[in-house]
Length: 338
Image (cartoon, rainbow, N blue to C red):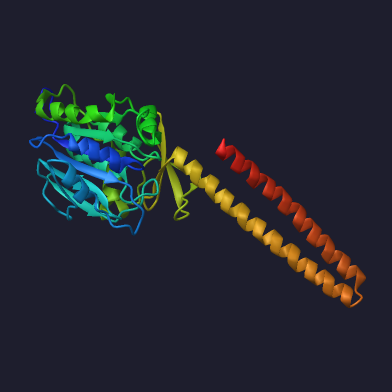
């Protein structure tokens, strides 16, 4: 962007998760019919669940809300909602839909929308993070900030699920943290103000790479390159190596095929994997104890005293190990609850 260039903030990207539909209805209901911007929305939905969100937003607000098709031209006054199980991506003048790798366990995910908008439109982007129970969107807001865009976060104190706004505030120097009912008036004001951009915001190399991998661009998939530095961790979804990416205070990971996680979510995933492994071990030990009991009973029935004692010892050892694992699982449950 040339120094002194006149720009308009006409690309608005919004991300939400748990509690987000309610928040979106209030926000969209307060938008003006003549908003000189295009609005893009990602809300997390379970896989296989059809989305009627465009119909809901179309009913509560003055703007036309749709699930776009791949290649749909971008028009002001429209709300483009990510369809189920597809990333919603922004290119210059058009929309891309892609079944790219999941990010933060989601597809559609918020980060790919925010990141591709920042990559394509730089200072023209306004990013908005609403209620959510996870941390998706923080890396995308960081990308918008890096490219000179405006970042807005719903006040966590009024969000139904505050974790997503809290994560954004923790990792990004956010421009506005507002109650929900103040966000629509802010968007209307920002979209109508032509501002002189006072600096250049070059695209970081990793941002371009990650924007393209979300859309399954073969030029990056086949390049053999990876963002960040190789870590000692493996991807929870495909078991491939993870590469560590540092963006300010934010630490993220991405694997060779594109699955992405922030550090907190990766830790949660590893903890879940450990819990699953413990339950598998507990089941195996209990089955081993039962089997050893049966073998001991049969051995005693044949008068094989030494064999029976050996099997009884194995049953006792398995049950002792099972007690230790149950204690670990109980303590973990107590820690989570507190």
